[in-house]
Length: 110
Image (cartoon, rainbow, N blue to C red; front, side, top):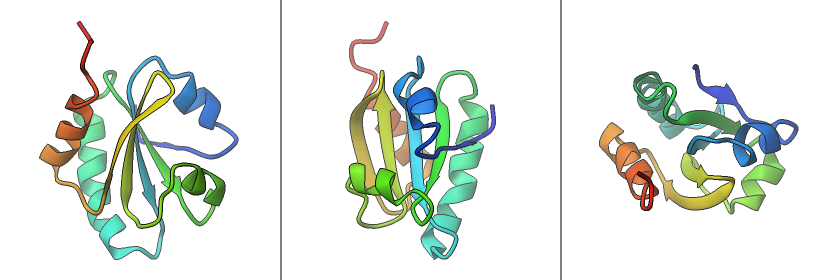
């Protein structure tokens, strides 16, 4: 599955009702660090296809979602599991950093 575009309209279906962990990249077109984050995020989405849902939230178009998750700086990565906020990281994350965020939310899983 490719990286999905998450909007206020599809947030409940794609994120809150998801059976898999969801990792969201809050970004904007004008953000240089966001452009650096994108290839790392996209590559990991390909690697973890079927295990994790990867979504992108454009903060300029979806300001309400950014506000809800207290995104004050971009890029911000937010991890959700079973519709519940788990953790977030601010700034460009490496592949290993993204994997660590996901792993930190796995406790209790078989």
